[in-house]
Amino acid sequence: MLFKRQYDNLTPFLSPNKVLVIYGPRRSGKTTILKNFLAKTKLKYRLDSGDNIQLRQILGSQDFSQIKNYASGYELIAIDEAQNIPNIGMGLKIIVDEIPGIKVIATGSSSFDLANKIGEPLTGRKRTIFLYPLSQMELSLNLNRFDLNQKLEEFLIFGSYPEIALLQDRNKKITALEELVNSYLFRDILALDKIKKSKKLVDLVKLLAFQVGSEVSLNELSTQLSLNVRTTERYLDLLEKSFVIISLGSFRRNLRNEILGKRKYYFLDNGVRNGIISQFNGLENRDDVGALWENFIFTEMIKSASYKERYANRYFWRTYDQKEIDFIEEREGKLFAYEFKWNDKAKPPKEFLETYPNTEFKTINKENYLDFIL
Image (cartoon, rainbow, N blue to C red; front, side, top):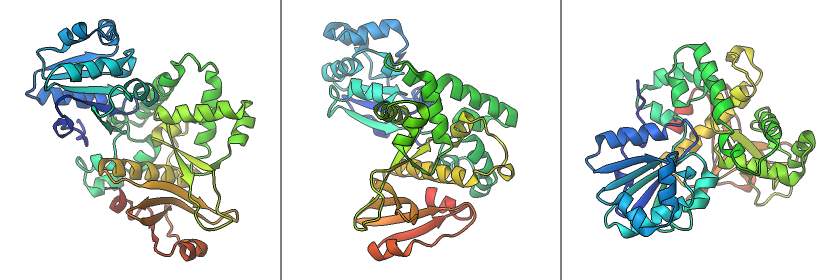
């Protein structure tokens, strides 16, 4: 079974003489979506890969005539793994500037690499969409609410990468996740010449896996890893830009004892988080269910907001005397505060409501979570 995806139809995102850039982590389904779309389109297209050495030479050459000859006669040029092509931004710019009416799609799994290569050359010439591992929104196109709820434990433990979600056997899921983590997770980062201490990077990710939903001290991480603070900070930035983790900053406006400058880190996928620490026990045999739930709901809310194009500033809130709120969205001039609780209901801290009286507060638990993420 192939899952329906949010971006199965790319037509609304295509415009003449513009590039549609599809970002996302490795194995999230970008290539599948691209090929399925091309199989249905009536446009005359050319599909190529950034792994093609000849294509790298052509698009990396900045030779107008060579690039025009490559793209001429087609209505659509599609390039998978575009981040592997040197000077890809300039190559795509030449295509959209020199061939009237042409449309271009470029996919990439490495945001820091591809963004640097296409950002400035394609200013005003591109649209970007982000493809996550399967969201509950997308799964609801295939499964009803009862089915989603029945599979909740599976999502908390094994995540929702498409190839993992398709597998039925538990042992096969574990094997596939370990392969995903070991073979693909760090590829984009370790491919960079400047990353030499790969073991330190792996150790950092493991430390983060045990601190999901907790404030992270940069100094403490650096001490545990025997790295300087700047290197640790750089590794965290690269992990985020390569779609392994997502960071959340702290909210502070009016109270003196509100924590400022701290960050929390979540994993883009629960299965990857569990794969990093090789922990696939059922929920009844775990002591980290609260962390799994918080990571799951946080990432699902991020996916939902992205696909619904709901733009907001996002934070957590905590005071030095341990009052806290897991997640805050600031949008349309209003604050929306959420606590993520597996079983319980929570009340907002009195200090928060007194300081920010117009805030809408909700507890998200396993009884009502689908109302918030679908």
